[in-house]
Length: 108
Image (cartoon, rainbow, N blue to C red; front, side, top):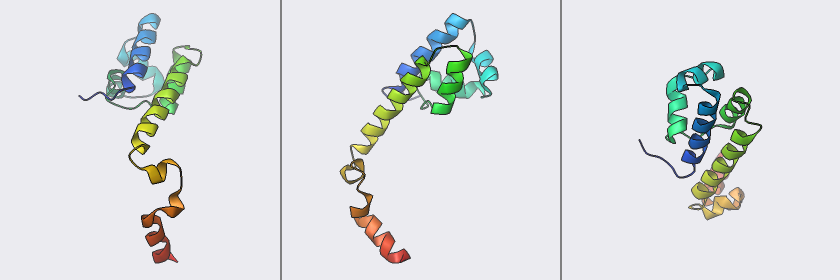
């Protein structure tokens, strides 16, 4: 399993809060309405934490917004890293992209 930098930060916090609450991954998954393998992948950093997952887990684990804050930070960092390879998209200038122009002309 490949871990992505940042995702493991959320997973560590999720694991810590689960241990404090005395919950296993299976128990947490049941309370969240997710399959336990999904929880396992998020906890290990193999899967990106979704905001909806973080919000629900935050409520179930009574984390006071900590999980939601970490997930938001992790997702923003992942998006920034992803967009750094596409400078024309990073500044949200999609109308100046050559592909956008070709698509626009084709559909007009």
